[in-house]
Length: 473
Image 1 (spheres, one colour):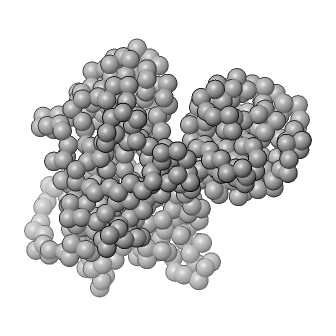
Image 2: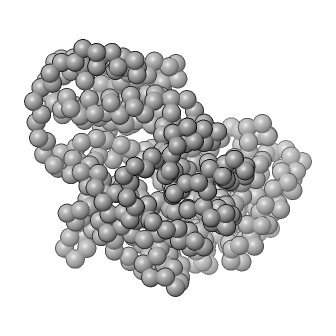
């Protein structure tokens, strides 16, 4: 608090936005966030995975006045580069402050001082600013959370089914790279009983006896942040892992039932909406059979961060998520995809690219895969190879070779989808080393940005031209 208090004495405004761009342990990060809030400012949690351009955009649009940056070279270069961009656009560079270390925070406790009286904030005022991953746009967008939303999020466990008293939840953010091995060791060392993690970790843990034993010992394993492979999910359920899905967004918080008491078994892909929110499901036959678009109505127990429509005279938020109901179990839903991810072919048929992309991206040679085909007769596939395999796609021998290597995986993906969704070998394009995929903070491709970048490569006219398509350098 003393570190931020000195800043408070030197600034006139109490609603300044203070950015945090730091690679550090989660305890220090949370302490800094709370100190900034306690001093009357608005903390802005910034992902260290942003590009300089993306960071400059976020700092400018949020009117950030100071930035606490960790002392590592990567963060210092990133924030300095963003400052240069801001100056080139006619703005002023932001003052940089050193992010206190864990030891510095502990030293403050050795000589505590009285804090100024608390001032109760307006519940509608901004408590903290987060930002999107940028998966649906070129640049991330800031997402302000009000004090009211903060309080609503804090009540989420009260709407769940599980008693959390005495439980230890493994969702740590460690000061070193959180690899699957590190996360596994952390969960075991802390004797955790509940586990939150990304699907990529589950895929790795499920492939080893040690990892599988740890998952089976958990009272609940919650997958969040990205789609989990159906094969992996089914494998975990077969091994009696208590697997559940976490559904939500930064703009809305958690929307699914928080930590169900029981696993849904073979229906693990589905979730039930939590009682604290009010979902409205709008049928979208134009997107496919039996698909619904999710709308959330603003109610006392749940307030979306953004309002973009009205439902029966009440403020509401349209998420652009498509959900699919369970064919037999009422109130069970699973995520089908996003409305802006769907590919509509020239014959009017729709394609959900995510399942196919997820399956193909599991091939060891592929880093990322994106389907394309909007307004054309057939879909295609754009792949970015692992760094050690990247080659000039004008090399026809290399292109033919990689198509042959990944073709069995593509064929497997084709067997799980409708005929109009299948990919033919000649419609596989390899990304150029000159145009690597633009990635989000979640290290996933920005679909629309990547496809725009490769417009000329995928501007085919008819199926006879497919076989001669090559990526230009």
